[in-house]
Length: 359
Image 1: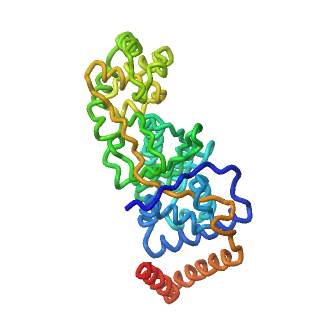
Image 2: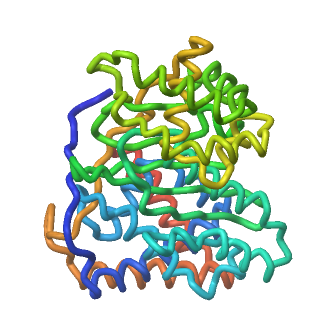
């Protein structure tokens, strides 16, 4: 049931050092507790849940209504467990901006050290980023990509995009066990409080378009350019999310040639080609609609309205003394549990069960 709508603007600045240091400590203790008592798989499952992730950010002291909760919580977790990854069998790669582009390299380095085959993990990282930046054209540019994984090959992606015009963010959650097909409804959740529409080539309804685009990928660039010019000459109504003036064929002609030379067998292979981005896919989708009558989906993939965190003292300033006590209680519970003292752990579990009954 919907009980309201949250409007979540971008907040300038960053978490103050005194808060981020505590976020690192508390996130480490929470991650260790969950992995110790429920396993690394449960940690992945919780991170894939947009509501749990948001609640986690709030518990760490980040304000509820800022887009920065995504980057800050992921960053705090990565820094918090640094040096303990091999012990707990839980790894985090990527991050914000330049760090996001180093994700494949980080995954490879971790896998080499642990004698893990990282090929599938690197592929999952790249494809999830490619889908949300090119196959889903919803107006949000990906700028943050965090990849969480375990030694058995299970993984979660949490990445975020920003709409520069509205200054609002959108968060994408991926869970490996939920991905049956990278190019057909692959998301576990897409979170945003605004639904604007856009080209969605990974929607179930876009299957015919994906097939048509794959067929077009075997055509010579000259043919695609000639058909593309016809698209530019058509009158497209104002409601159409891909206006004709947005298609610059001269910019994608080289990509058409590259696609043809590679002759991809399916849409997923085509999407994974280097250089294939939003412009070329947009042009191919329109040409496929013109030739085959396969109209792509414009359904916005956002499924959840969610509240972001912030760092400006709402709903009240962080109580540093209480925050530090919480870290110490969790740290102590984990240390004692590891040597056989389950009493405090049992108490925390009973408290959690009691809170559910009360709520």
